[in-house]
Image (tube, rainbow, N blue to C red):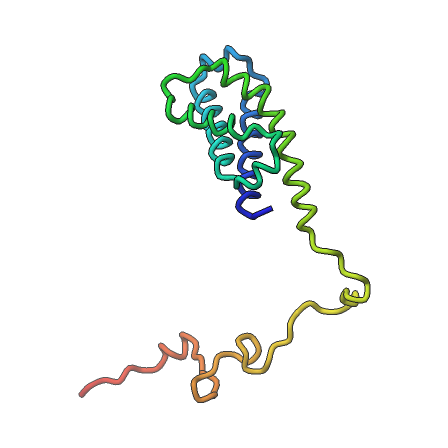
Length: 172
């Protein structure tokens, strides 16, 4: 799966989980009286639809069971008809459709994660248990020999005490 698709699917999962979390322990009547709940659900579902619209057509065609057009259409409706949101549909979507959609999308990410896992190293390619993972540095390299001037001589660092203890030259 392309990295962009993976990111968009992750956004969808996060927003769906948020919508489910927002409605946990709540009733439909709470939506009418709680403006923050309404805004939160609208925003979460907008994110789901926006992310769905950014998933490549190739990936959408490979997963016809996911209602891509419906998700995108709902996002358009929530964004462009913000003044006329039907809270019954919003609630039903958050309570029923979000968990079902989450159950469809999470396995896609898991199967992709397993497909991208690098093969395990065979025992002969592993480092011995006592081997150090630190790289050796050449003398004169940044951590090996300190800073050097263009001529190769080490730069002399003076402490603040040495620098400021010298008496300033006075003009006569």
